[in-house]
Length: 339
Image (cartoon, rainbow, N blue to C red; front, side, top):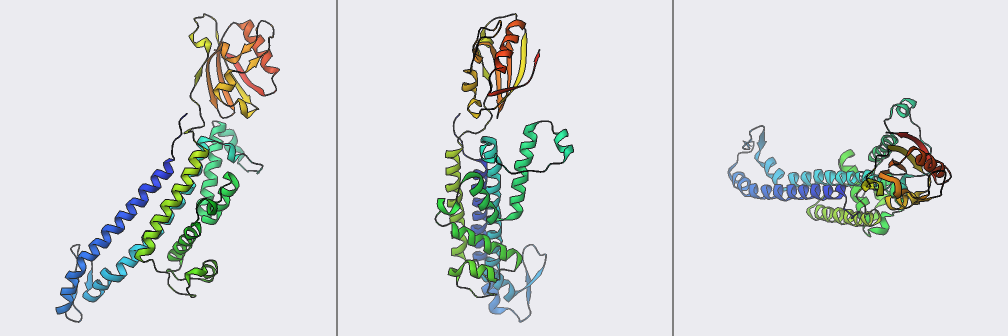
């Protein structure tokens, strides 16, 4: 199956571009308005007010000039930083769900989980429960912040952000600055000063977001996202862990024999692909002459470590085949029936 990039990465790059366009055009409009306000200021009375074309509120001329030249651009950059870092966190959490669609191996661990009994009994399939668990982990990371995400990627995927991106400390600083702009009007606290001594700020200083900073934020976030997406695409190249259905020799052999369907649990992960399972050799047993699974298979549908197999053969051969399957310790028969 050909490799494919991650949707979460494409989405993040698109959102970051939109934010960059918003910043560029809005600053352009501020710059366009400034000369007009400067002309008005020359003849304005002390308490004169004006309105914009929207007319929703009156502005003092001096205040509007300050808004266009200083206050507005600063506030805009603060809001864009908040949105950019949020989009980066969304990218990091959505990647987890996409990885799970490609490969469940990183999520298989010794951790214990708790699920309501009703959820287990009412779940339509084990796949549904798996999806729920992955979603639960992603939601927890969303509320935990970047530090929890760093630990999660280290644990699940053996990826150290600082190792794959040399400027990751700047990504962390962006995240911490965003936090202070959301919760403390941008004022530096002791934790920030201790963690980022290179910033050279004092307690209570406002961490401004100037033009150079926001441009660097755009660049750094794109470069970090690209580095991570590249590594993960190489490690998990397949678009889906669900292989397309495979058809065996019996699918092209005319026969009036009945069809049988069975579900197998694959206890050996090496069998969890179409080629390996179809080439599985089984011994002679009863009326079954032995051979590969491919010989009497019509269709194989593989999902993780579970296989649905449709066979076409006689009842006697099927009985011998089932006996041969039971001798294989790498396979467990869940159920079987005639169609």
